Length: 355
Image (cartoon, rainbow, N blue to C red; front, side, top):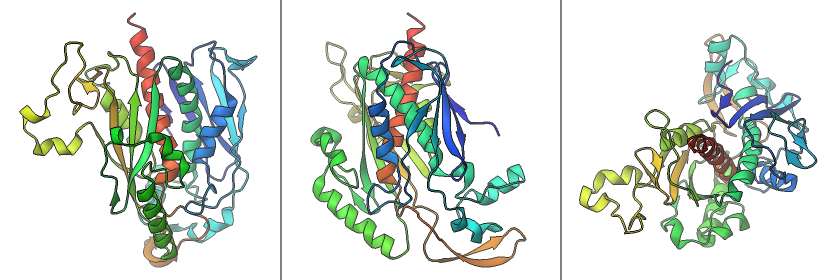
């Protein structure tokens, strides 16, 4: 099974399954001498972990990190940094009813066809629990990048039909972590939470969107033509479970604009008067804020009956069991930040190689 690594100079290789012994990763390329703040890493993991509120899965996992290598006397050594998060609350019996059944819109059928074997316990490797490794690697990337003045802020901007209409400049992003939905507009957050609860009572699920803002970036990050910064950010976001779309800057809204409206005019200090480019021009960062949106589909597992097929191709009826998210976006905020941090970290180190 290929495809378990991301990055060039800063690379994460992840391993593990949803209901196996644990999950973890190896970070290659972490600079030496960086003070390791394990409390910060744990805080990031806590933002992603299940069971944190009434509107997410109630699986109870401590998600405690074990550092196996690459750290000595509280600092990174520059050697491969290996870590492990052990699974503590697996309930494989919750999935015994789908051992020979393919869940609609899941990876069950495609994994079975590709590999000839399938871990049906929570989806195995295809489970979103794999993202725990991304969050750890993202935390280490953030540790280094914040020393360079680079910061990441992601927040929920839409759940179902409820959409944030304000721009990120109009919002107090410090409010993002003050509510279960992780939306910095508190009135809208309350509506969103109520809506998710109603959807959950129906045994149904709902999708949403997350916006991420990256501030403090220097100019010059990005490797045209095939490793453009926005292309790598798009790949990173689209690798996250349940993601269906990515747009940066003006995105699809640019279609309805004229060039005279869309062009970002320069100031004499080379900043721009607008930022429809989303901080990236020609695949290279221009020093302005990078901002983008990531769209998430509704969770495929429903707590209501669905028709599907089994491995023999027979039509069957199934109903979800166990503990599942009615909406993934609140827990995915930190995952989006982590994948952005991995991408920026890799390109930051690549840009340094020119110096």
